[in-house]
Image 1 (tube, rainbow, N blue to C red):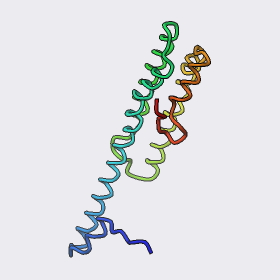
Image 2 (tube, one colour; image 1 turned 90 degrees about the vertical axis):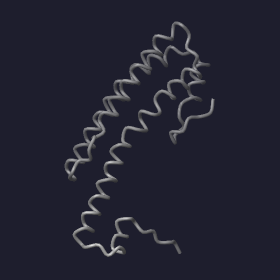
Image 3 (tube, rainbow, N blue to C red; image 1 turned 180 degrees about the vertical axis):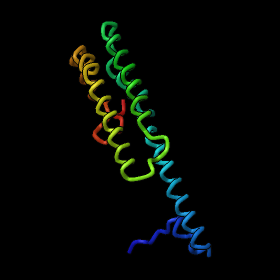
Image 4 (cartoon, one colour; image 1 turned 180 degrees about the horizontal axis):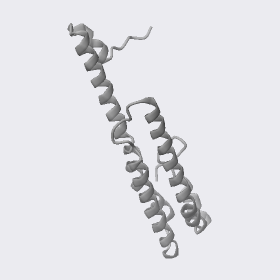
Length: 150
């Protein structure tokens, strides 16, 4: 049998607080969780980009001729990371339809970022020799998003 967990909002009843204050507390807890989710929205995106680019550079070791393509990829990547991070709402939308609209907007931004990255990434990839492509395959995140060791 599993053990039951008690949420902080449910424990308010144990404190003998009036129903009015209980409702206010629950609203405050839900609001705090929503703010935390909104703040975390951009964190994974922004944190991973520089380390991914360093891993690619270490794995590929671009030549002088490839350096311009790598720099274009790095700059475009940094720009798209900022764009995607800025698509996170600063304050959680108040109702379901606003949240749905915010998700739709964020997906549009992500699609734009992918479409903007594709030609730059393809150009850089096409400039690599077979050994560099093999190194790149080993440096990119696995299907679970974790970076493979160098």
